[in-house]
Length: 488
Ligand SMILES: *Cc1c(COP(=O)(O)O)cnc(C)c1O
Image (cartoon, rainbow, N blue to C red):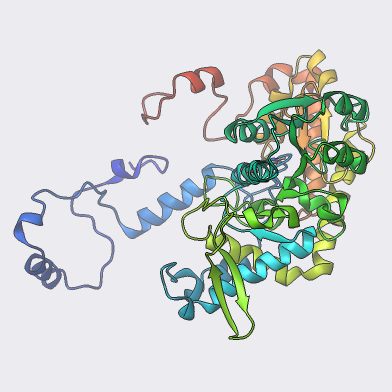
């Protein structure tokens, strides 16, 4: 019997072939005529021999083993796992976009360069920045690019700088990028309102500070309302302000980071602008800058020559930090983002932010009756539960996350941000219906209410997933990627 979860190689049987309309005898004769004898292999390729239906079922079954945003709710805090409208894919898959080659002559790719040009214009309009590079593949790569721009700026100013300030709530990629760019990290504390502690910031900022990276709104889902003070403190020492824009969906269409005083920011197209996300596929993390940094942006930049009515890439950028991606970035992702922006328009994008905030606050209000939510005042698009009450009764944030899997939901982000004990970070996003939010809230409430009666059961969850609870320490230290049916 073929087990539907079995490896496709184990399903293989000699002689099974998918349906084919090619005359096999003619085809094989033909190939042998064309390929020189010494290049023909004398053994069969190591491919499974299976029928078309086996292949289709195999991949369909694989596609639903893991959780994904097309399957069910994905409230992963910070990550903005919103539904990706399928029209984005249809547009990106049009042959003019999908089959274009980056080495084609500009004259044959005018529409393609226009996509770069228009997307850059839209992102500049939404952020208030002067120019935007579309090359970086992810937010984290955008961070590194932003810091290299910061470094170039200080080199040009002949500034001698050593440190970049980041808050203790920062995403882990922030300190990593600081180190990769050759700076050192200075950490600023949070105050009791969950925002940057201004007094502490004043203490640690001096002429050695190259700049500050700040997530706005921050990773507790709170708007840094003293942003003008923060930015003057940094600018006073000719430091630059970097905005981690991963949470842009909370303010898109409503507030422009450049007007707050930020000099540089990245935008995660796969978060805010709804391009596919997760699973290791391509993303895009454009970096937008103000006038101070335009000359240093990665090369080339898309331009429009009005006189000759022609789009082109400008390579003559003497002060550029250089290329940060082969060719011009992950084009398919850029097409999807431009499609999303064009369809929604200004008003639609503003509604994105409003609904993202409404959905998060709706869930927060329901759950606050059962879970502690510190710094709950002023939440925007996400909020952070502190499951200390539940932990005291024996159920940790990790157990709550695992229990949610049995309800068919993805677990929220847990143990981040690190300044909240037993943190559970929830971002519903604007694409979810009230029914979905209600059923998620119901699951969270049931888990809380069952702690006393079903503690052992909950601590051993999940039960309905392809794999049960893994020993995560062993999995990390002794990675075993050999599949075996015998092992469980
Ligand atoms: C997701 C995220 C990043 C990193 O972005 P990637 O596109 O995943 O590399 C950085 N900061 C914050 C706050 C994030 O949520």
